Length: 320
Image (cartoon, rainbow, N blue to C red; front, side):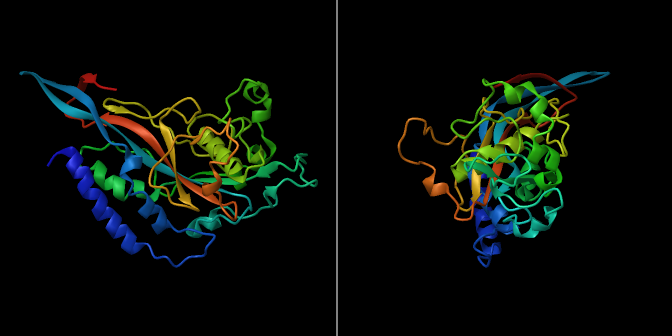
């Protein structure tokens, strides 16, 4: 059985199993962990490709032997990023308790004149964001990784990599980002028509609720995929090693990260953001993706490259 046949054989089986497991009984404003698992059976999101080969060498006192293994690249659903306006009201049923309201993190939604941040523009939206290790990493994709044709993810399933309610100084007051050149430089990166990546906080000057929620989610991913950011978070960064090439940090100028909507609608593919170029359109291409309650969740699929280790030393590899 070749590799592509193997992939296609697993997908229907896993989809059937998880569809049976995922019960539809839930509040209309929430989703559950079984639904997250079910949505991760997404061959289009995986984008599996054989791209080359790796040559390994093992030397002993009697000589050296070489062996080859295929080099592949594919995406993995590293985390689920949840964006929601009301603190303590995450739409992920089982994990709502992780982000309760505190004396430093209350309220949310649209900016009001009483906000301590001083952001009184009615177009200013606020979103909490939670970044949680995808449960499919240790189940579905953990099993596939054991076959040798898939690359493992460094993600820990259900690990809270970022909870904005615990990072009130950074998420609500933009510190220390307000002290950086990236925040004040008018040429800093912007996510299409969504808005600037910096400062990486929950307040967004954006009247469109989907774009505001997506930009907040992107900012959180930009943060957690880097080390040493002087914020309260768990870095999701993998080190390159022999036969393993992880993705770079999430940014607007790379194509290694794609987003699959889980809630309020389930998408059957993962997309680079911005998904649409609406800079010159008069219609709203994001209208079909909008949530009635401004709660959103996406699986974040990141591109990994690697090959099975078959020797002591990697002496050559081919294919990008």
